[in-house]
Amino acid sequence: MKRFHYALILAAVMVLGVSCKPKQSAYKQVYEAAKEREMQQTASQPTTVVKDASPLPPVEVSVRKEKVEPVYANDAAGLKKYSVVIASLSVKLNAESLKERMVSEGHQVILAQNEQGMYRVIVASYDDKQQAAAKREQLYSTYSAKGDTDYLRKTYGVPFNDLWILERQY
Image 1 (cartoon, helix red, strand yellow):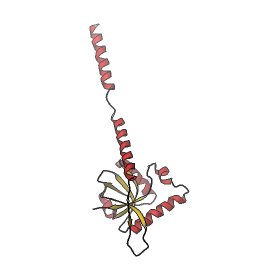
Image 2: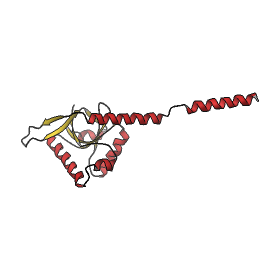
Image 3: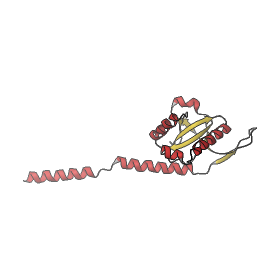
Image 4: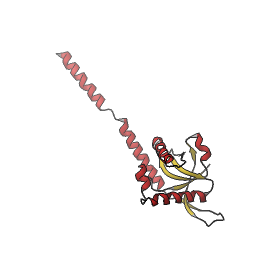
């Protein structure tokens, strides 16, 4: 009878010990949510407005300056000084998924990572800021023509607020 009680107590202690362990996935979800909030706060920070001194009429474009590196070596040649960014994501898998969907629409997408570890999903990259601004406007008008200014978020499920231009720092 004593052995039965000891076995019962031992089983209860084992069950309690196993059930009290924290679940890693719950911590991971909280961590990813915090990273997304951080990303949104970074995106809402003030940006510099740079006036281009080219022979064409100056265009005021919101430009963010960052040091970024391509995620994949084959993207290195395509990453120029000015890039049109459609999303900033903290999880590489999500950025790769968005890249695949945008490639299927015909865009040549580049993934770049900044010093804080955020993945920038770039749909076009140019040496000239005017070209980047024109591509950004073209994308806005393309998606606005679909009658839905929130088309990108609804289609891809990514909470990005706007298309913006990244000036690459070396």
